Image 1 (tube, rainbow, N blue to C red):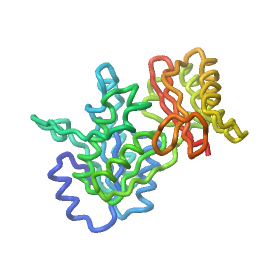
Image 2: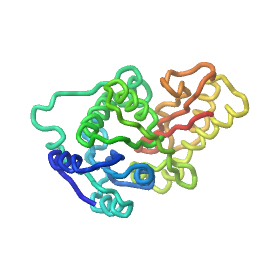
Image 3: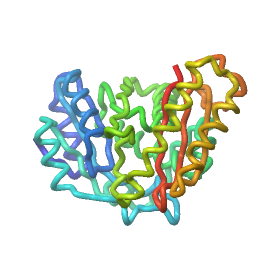
Length: 277
């Protein structure tokens, strides 16, 4: 496994690779969810490239950029065990040199849910992913279903800009109580960790209500919120029952539907989602 830190070296190595290239962009502090992406890429592609970069452009003022967990030595060892071929670990100055002033801004779908709660977040995501795609030039890129809105935005960007990259979506990896794996779970105290399972319970309730024939989206949203409100450590940011392709909120469930939510558990904000089909 080769560790690469500059764009020039990454491009030189990329030119030497002859075969299908799978790419897994990450912000590091890897967990089983990330490794599931690498495993999928390993099974489908001849070469696997993983990036580790905590992108400052997707953190708003007051968010947890400086506190975001990092352990590059552990990350490299995990990727070595997964037989990754190249790990790309650029610096901020490498990715955003002096004078950087170009952004990728995907409209409409970025304006709701995470986009409404975290203004500018997806502009930072789209910009860094576009840059990484241009540097690595993969055949396929792998993302987790846990970040469903991000996946839709990346797919839109790839289609609109004719990038010719296949976006593969890997199911969310969960703990035994249903909590989606996330680097931010590290911030939870033992009591908060127990409380965090309420996100999965709320999503499961939404799916059960739909399976029972409920079609009124407000009824499902309200019951999800009521369940979360019973957990003293939880505070709802948003609960959504939306068109799975556009994320437009629904009144009546008459198409493929995604339930998603963002919930504060103490000082930690967690997100999750689940298809209602």
